[in-house]
Length: 242
Ligand SMILES: Nc1ncnc2c1ncn2[C@@H]1O[C@H](COP(=O)(O)OP(=O)(O)OP(=O)(O)O)[C@@H](O)[C@H]1O
Ligand SMILES: [Mg+2]
Image 1 (cartoon, rainbow, N blue to C red):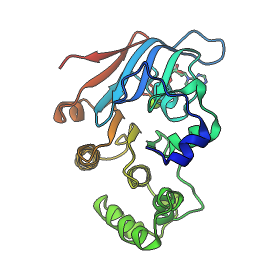
Image 2: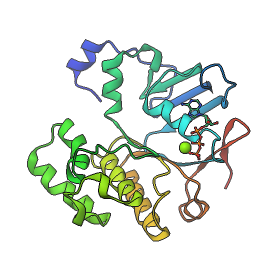
Image 3: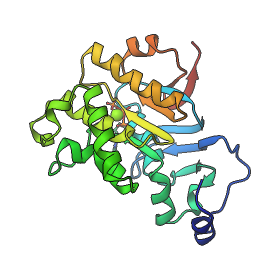
Image 4: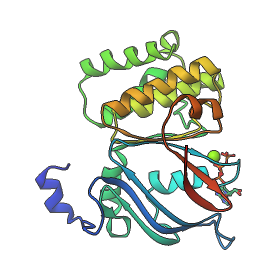
């Protein structure tokens, strides 16, 4: 997973009590903001390598809050969170930064860098990962073509529509083929045909080994793609029978 050098220097505290196939593991997790009551209680969740889950629940039920615990790697106010087999409480900032590189996030509000072009937004994770300019010049346009954005390759995000921005955010999150993809309403602003096409990108990535979690309100996507569904209901997370 890491080079020996990094591993020795960073003195990770491996959480041996957990299944090593779990990328994320939560036990008895509670989520709340400030001193308000918990919006989610007693969350028990294992996200395994190579798995695929939808996450659904009413607006305001806590989907984004649950996902943000995974991608910001904040310790929960209550309970236990492990990522990639390591107890989150035992990690320092540098160690967390290394884990974050293994996660591709599509934020509900996109969070594109407005001063960079579409190309540079999507290329950035590859630059950070140290990929060669040749590799970047080949793969970024390929992916932009697939999501029908090749004509906007040099555009700045500010001139794009909501759905176009959303597709750039998806491309940026998937371009490094991360071990874990967390997508918060990634198809909320595109038409049904484009939503299906984008879902196939996630499916393809999952077939190559990435674990995928997609928060969505779309019943038709959930029906069309027969993956397990995590639902939030009355402050609790449960796996829905299908
Ligand atoms: N930063 C914050 N500070 C205080 N309360 C917050 C914050 N973020 C979210 N909340 C509250 O937590 C609850 C869950 O919000 P969250 O954004 O996780 O819901 P969601 O399921 O993602 O909703 P949606 O489907 O609309 O995106 C809401 O009641 C919201 O008001
Ligand atoms: Mg949300």
